[in-house]
Length: 144
Image 1 (cartoon, rainbow, N blue to C red):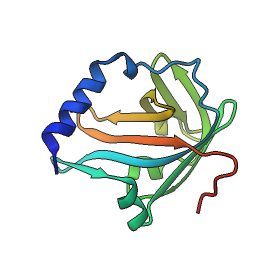
Image 2: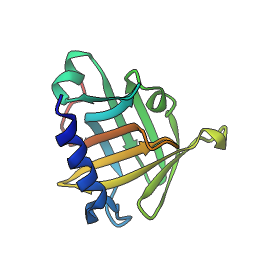
Image 3: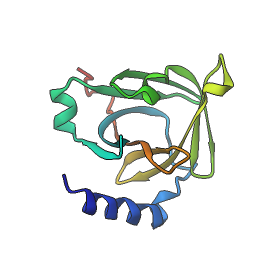
Image 4: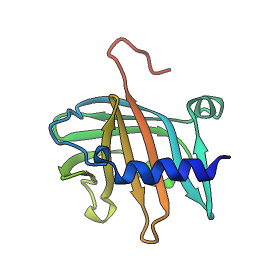
């Protein structure tokens, strides 16, 4: 695992203007997770598209006007708790709002790059809880 180069890319991304998501970008649509990083017990885990397919893991997020729905088959508690609700954007943060309990709201930093959506969530110690890369799903593309 190339932790140093991945970390360098991550730091570079954080300091770039790309990190600031734009509300003018259209989130409405369906997004498929194709890669993610997360800190697990002081180790950076990196799952690529091929790894996700091999382990039968999938996350699909559908954004409608101000509502979202997440279909997740993945072993990440943060993502598993996201089901259905409303979403809100403030600056470069998107909040997934739990309709039953506001304490379950989850806030991600977001950005767009080359048509893909990036979602980043760090804990209070600065550890990466989830850093996911999502590609848009075309209407004709099947989600097997």
